[in-house]
Image (cartoon, rainbow, N blue to C red; front, side):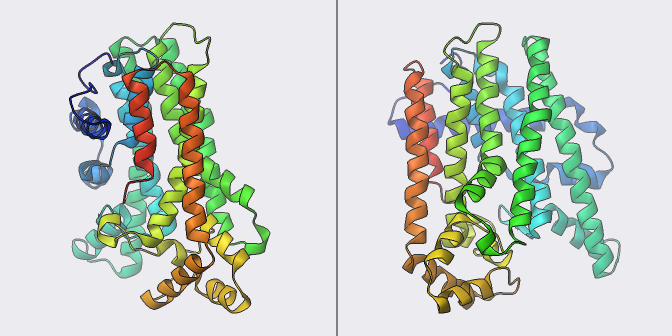
Length: 371
C-alpha cells in the first residue's frame, strides 16, 4: 500500500484489518472535525444537529472500503481522504432522514436528531408535545439536507489534492444522478412495502429494495475509490466496476445481517430497540420467508404483530420463536454468507496485494459485527 494511513503491521490479518479500520476512522473524522467551511453551518441548532452523529463516530466501513479500493488499483489513499469523508457524511444524512421515516428515537445508544430537538423544544422553548415534535423533525430534515450539500463540497476538495477536475466532476455527477436516485428508490420501496399485503411481495422485489437501499452506497464507495486510485490511467481490466460489483454484493449481505441483528442482537450493543423493524411493519426477507412457512395460527400471530407499534417484549419474542422454528433465521444467515462468498470471488481478478487481502477482511467483518 502506498501510505502509512492503512499500512500493514505485524500480527494476524484480523489484527491488521482492525488497525486499518481504526486508522481510517481517525483520519476521516479528523478531516471532518477540522473542515474549514463548517463555520457556515448556522444557526446553532442546525450546526449541532449536523455534527450530532459525526461526534458519535460511526464504524467508518464505507470510508475504509473507498480507501482500500483506491489502494487496490495502485493509488495513494491519502489523496482519497476527502472522498472517504464525503461517503461517510452521505451515509450520515441518510441515517438522519431514515430515523425520521422509521420514527426511531435512538441511534448509536443516544437520541436521534429529531428526538433530541423535540426534547430540546420541550425543555428550552416550552412548546407543547405536538409543536415540539414538529420542531425536532424540522431540524432533522434541514440538518440532513445540509449534510447532503456538504457531501458535494467534500468531493470538490479532491481537486486540492491533485485529482483531475474532470474526474472530480465525474464523481459528483455519478453521486447526484446514479447513487442518490438508487438509494432513495430503495428507501421509498421500503416504505411502500410496509403498506402492502405480504402476499403482494416476492423475494426478488425485496432483494432489489435491499440492493438499492444499502448496496448502492457501498458500490459507489468502491467505484469512487478505484477511480481516484486509477487517476488518468486506463482501466482495461475494468477494476473499478469489478470493485463496485464486489461492494454491491456485500451490501445485500450487510442488510440481511442487519435485519437479523435487529431481531437478535443485544440492545445495548445495537444502539436501538431490538424488534423495531417488527413494530414498524418492515417487510424484511426473513419475515417474508417465515410468513411463507408458518402455519395458519402462527401466520395470524405474525401478521397481527407486524406493524403493531406498541408490541410488547412478549409479542416480539413470540415472533422470534416462529422465525426460528420456520428456519427463516438460519436461512437468512446462509444467504448472507453466500453473497459474501460471491463478492470475495470477484476479488480474485484483482492484483494480489495487501489491499485485496484487506478487502476480503472487510467483507468478512460485515457478517461478524454485532451492531
